[in-house]
Length: 179
Figure 1 (cartoon, one colour):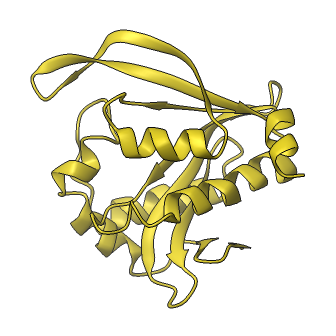
Figure 2 (cartoon, rainbow, N blue to C red; figure 1 turned 180 degrees about the horizontal axis):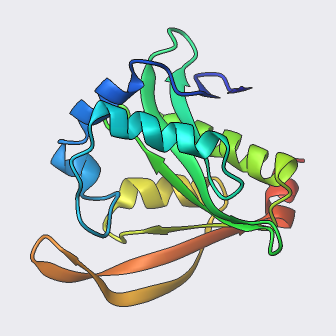
């Protein structure tokens, strides 16, 4: 388990699936996380996603919990892990509207980046984000992600075509900020 001041990365708990199944219906949460079809996941579906990643060499998933009461507030994943190329993609989500602006995301990203660079020996961790998701972009750049490019009119979102921005952080850059 990776523990920060306010949040920790943890394993899936028995009731997490129910929470995630209920939170998925928040339009603001789900619409910024998926660029494809929205699937109505059951509590069992969420559990299966986490449990399948337990034995995976290509994906790893953690729940994000508050350190003071162990309550679930989100999740973070490293997916498409390439052992040969030492790269992967980061995904993070905070379903409750009151949580994203409290610094939990920044702290959780620092924990997962530390895990990715120190434990998995990743060279590059990348992510994609809607340019209008300014809170997420601010959090990503705060921990050291740098914009690498933009795919124009990449996603059909809310009745119109929108861009997707691609960001990355490299192991050497991460280590330099940790000194």
